[in-house]
Length: 483
Ligand code: N7H
Image (cartoon, rainbow, N blue to C red; front, top):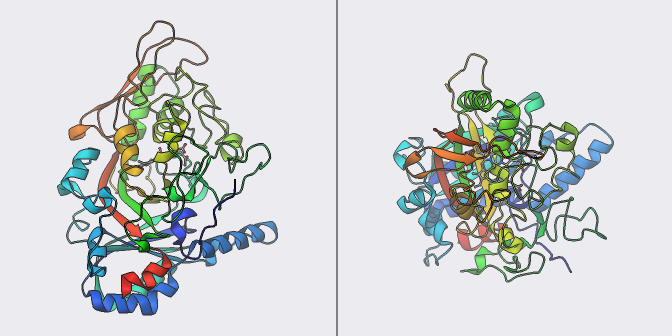
């Protein structure tokens, strides 16, 4: 099957590949004077926006350097720019066509909050909700001083045409925790492969996969202007997602969620519940996530960690859930089994229509030994990309993570009856912030029939701000959006 040709010089760098980042500044702004703003963006900013092609070139340079000299990703700075529905309305004077319904509504709309069981806007960060948010700059780089310098430079160029509503810096965790999120788990392990971008590591025997287990998807799932997935066949090319206007081409929707993580509370809960269940606490935490801290998937390391497996990109995604019909290795409700059920539902093709590309970064300080209840705000600046927020991010949150009946149709072994898998214990949210349950925290592996439930009285991941953006192509930034 012929891979599509992607216009990488048109697509913003964070969308498909991710800007290289130790540090990322999220600058949320309001447009004060749209005429000046357009002129200044066109004149000074567009040329600084980092494309996927540039990210690719950096990647090559870094890989080459790794082979010869010391890896030095530290020179690279990235800049990307997105607009909310309000922002686009300011820029397109002729009027905005109907876009993705979720995007048009916005993350802070009552209906969105209700549909996702999100905490009310009144509980979000005060500064974030203090004013209208029209757009966001993502400024990335190796260290805080240089990222701050770059951010200030962009803000200086835009002068009084915008007002910063809120900004916050995300940072990868230090030392051995690098690449791990604040609960301690390796993140960024599984991402969809993209046809036309991700190469197959085994073109002869696994042409439909990038790395082993990484299904290749048609790019229209993530970027406008290309074929997406066929709804009935996971391999076949489907139609291109509808484009309400031609300037959507090579653009993507971004979901931003500032998710605070209650780390000491999570640890305490896991320790108490592991003691109650008579099991290892590391195993309980892993059964909530579906992977070990090292990244090793429970499907391949059901009882003991295997750090070599976790670190091996050729093996750490090479599994399905279909071989684990009674959740003996990995609970149905575990975060990764909910968020990407692989072959666990009636239709593998359908599952691939609800994928996202994740590009988040942790924020906040490390937990000090004395911090036994959360005193400092920390968590994940969650970011994901897609061509339909409704069918991708919102579907995962609402129909999978928040839905105790998903995956449906599972039975206990023998004549044990139907299973209610429960909520995703990491990101699932129950109506009114009420308590959640998850089935089978204790492993019946390799055999056994001990029935256990995990009652989770509080959220360890709490939404404190959210917004939806559109990341336009470089050409759209240079033309339609700034003329
Ligand atoms: Fe999740 N965690 O540490 O527990 N996530 N996530 N996520 N997540 C994943 O594969 C985590 C969040 C997905 O392809 C891993 O990269 C935390 C939201 C998807 O097999 C870990 C938070 C949504 C995958 C975590 C959080 C998702 C995934 C395994 C919030 C979307 C890929 C490492 C604070 C609604 C599944 C990896 C696959 C993986 C964690 C948020 C979705 C460790 C702490 C909001 C699709």
